[in-house]
Image 1 (cartoon, helix red, strand yellow):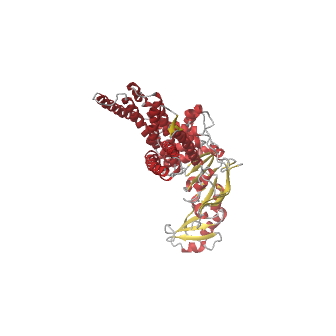
Image 2 (cartoon, chains in turn blue, brown):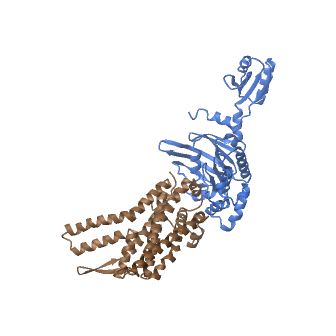
Image 3 (cartoon, chains in turn blue, purple):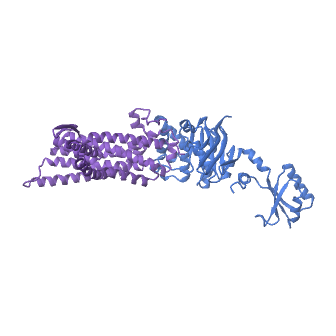
Length: 317
Length: 311
């Protein structure tokens, strides 16, 4: 599948500060790309370059085949951008807000009314059509802004922290909305530092830290990497010392930890296990065979938080 | 490399005036609710009261022996209305535009607009149109009050037309100056301060400089330049005075009126300087040309500022 966003050696410097360092990305059309990283990592800088708001110091970037520096107008036609912090015109009605931006995207007046209704239906704001924007909740404003990005039917949505500042319910609604847009075939490039939100809708993720892309790839591949470091929690009756001594003799066990070293209940040991399911089953059999009084044996479900912590370990410092 | 000059939008003038989304949005916001109409009503009410008081004062004075000529009442009425319009052009028009671009930045809507297909010159033009539209509404709404001057007599149609032209040209130029400050600075407060500093300089500072410069120039020309014939120095001084008057709206209005009354000319006339006939021009001509050129240049600079990508 063709790359809809591509960057080559993209670099942005502010004096001596390197905000973005040789970023190379290639995002396929129709994918949902989650751009993960802590605050100040370079996510917003990347997005501002891709949306033609910022000129890179070095390197090149293309969106939908158009250079962001040489053909910004074509890039703007191809993207819908929602910044991290955005304002709304408080003294406008909801439909006027969408109508205004549709006009800015050169949508003819006779098609705007129907389009506004469709967009409001998509983001579930039909009932607020005549309301003033100032009367909307934060979540509603966020959805309205998302609807705004769709007025010109762009190929790719670039969303900077779309769920930031939302309450849990609004976060879920936003996630559902992104899923719906994904089903509509839109390419979505969005950033987040709330990793669990990215996990279940992304097809690809990139992890950026201190301006460098330190991990990039298919979501499932990332999870497989995570499985190379499975965390197993084993609970036994009585003292955990014999259990730990035995575990450290096992070839697939990297290390063990128990209370008070880590926050675990008494009698529980956490194991960093590098083997597959077969090796895990064999280890459980060995434990029982050794006569260790196992009363619980479970694997902690790995999520992106773990991937993130493992991949970025020590980079910031 | 030559910079790209701002072009008018690709559509016709009718499209630009009617379909500019920024203008539509701004006007919709400005005219929504009672505020705009309350301001208009108060403006006309105060103006009517002022004119009534002026008329009553003149009527009363004219009945006295050696009182003023009643025909002067028309001129005073016109001058009063134009005086208020000058304030509108010099202070209200740029006040509307000084926060036009910084307001978008402070509201965090600027980036949203810049990623749309809206050309930079449409954005600037829309802001300008919306600000001027309201000022023009106030000016046009006061025309019936100005026409009272015709009933009272002593006012020529040319006086009214020239005064309106000058006020409108000044409103356009100062409004664009406000927009330029707004594109240059980060906050509305800073843009407003810069805008008012500039307009006050042109309306108050220039006459002071004229006074200082005039006395200096006259001493230079008549005191130390013995090689130059006296009439040449006099001509240079008069032209310098006319030029400086052309930079200032009140001075232009007053001097143009003097030309009309005393020389009976709207454009040019010949003055005798020690037997040498020299052409002099009414300052409203140069005022109009200079301010339209300045307005165009500042508009161009503003468009460049808006078009610029952050580095």
